[in-house]
Length: 366
Image 1 (cartoon, rainbow, N blue to C red):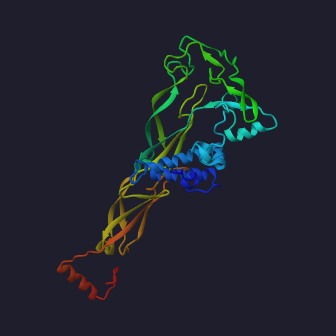
Image 2 (cartoon, rainbow, N blue to C red; image 1 turned 180 degrees about the vertical axis):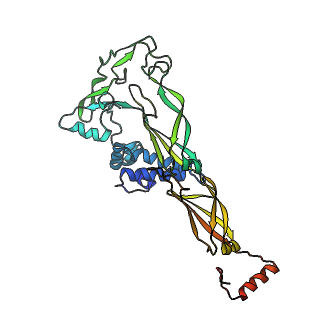
Image 3 (cartoon, rainbow, N blue to C red; image 1 turned 180 degrees about the horizontal axis):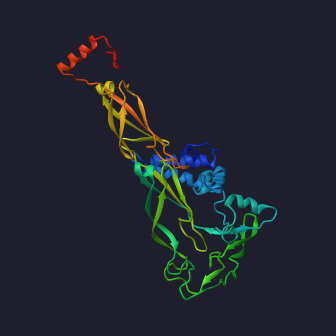
């Protein structure tokens, strides 16, 4: 089955900006999340796959040029990698053709990796948490449990068994790279490739860590505390810098926490406004009354003036959602529904008939 176009999956144009792509991903992820009623795991995975490619400038460039083949999405035949069958030396290489050809291949393959690419960085991690309506309004502190590649507790990330030190790599002499000559369609090509012995670090442990095997990281269960700010909305994302996965001799990636807010049985939200509905009888609407209104702050006594019409809105100031930029809160809007009885006793009908004959027109036109 042919793979769908990634832009089509996210519902954006091929000229979409990074922000448009990110917003489309968040919208789709919230809509099809498997934990949500009516979610679709297959579509959720498809959306994630598309976003992983289009959010990365280099992957997006290769995808725009070669389609799925450029990002590993197809193999073989006319749809496959246009360079399949040629050995370009794997990851961590650099090409030295002269005349700018290295730049051309750098565009195709993202350039060299390893020692020449700058500081290493761990993988970013994404997760989601679900809040109640009230937690989103007032803010809350949550704990997230994740399994992550984190610094090895035994060797503290050095990769060496405690009591042993690091020594210069005997194969690359500390350079982190090796030069080799290979045959290609262009003839012999000289490459600078990442040293496989030291993985580009230039040093190796005298004795590898008995726990991580020299990697400097191990898979660990971590509990992360996250403070959810008051007023956060459904579909928002919180970024925790350097709370993602660790990598030896580099910085940690980031953790992206996507927020889902459960629907409330009585309240709805529009920005910093909370909306709800209260029912009153036609007699109370005509004569006026006081009712207890449910708010996120508890019950609030509200006066209903005489002659209130069906559909009238009342505002309870300061009982809505907090604003991010200041300490003020939006209002709670209460919509009034006047209930007209469908069944009347004989006496009730007589009273209404008397009212009608009195010639006075009330709020119900009788």
